[in-house]
Length: 227
Image (cartoon, rainbow, N blue to C red):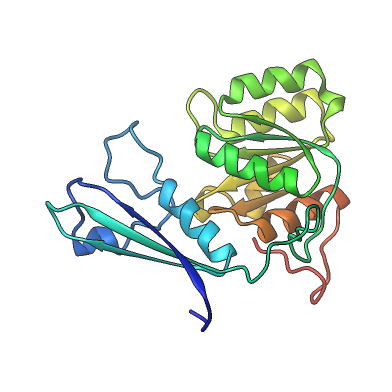
């Protein structure tokens, strides 16, 4: 952590606490101690991604049977920016229309917010069947679909196939927390333009979206796409 002023946010619970083995994995995408169907394992991974994006630090104090306490440090802002003067960094932006699909409500809210900050118009959905119906109703109203891979009712692969059946030229990005679920060969077979690893951060998302929409890669030193 760089020297300077920080704002600390502390969140505590009175739950069961965690052992050393669990602590080592709590920020891993899809890791969860909950029963099947009770958790996605993406909550702390998303938090970690947000903290990292803001150049902060997160730590945890915990003991089995005594609950857990998380400490988050964010760099303090020296002065309040003027209205409308907020900068989101040297990342590509746009105004196109996007459908974002993930069965995790928190991820939809956060990712939709990031895309809207970049200037895009976004339809966020937690139900892939509902997202497909929206697309089917107005397929030419959208420029891009971003979808998770593992979802109930319909996987991201299945959604991508249905969408390209309706509109073969539709651009699609798959989000995944597992590299073995998606690679360039499989993506090409499904007609998917790109895939992006979770957890998402603003720069990674901005670069990949613009890259797919423009059908090009950003040069090193300008923007740095991460896959």
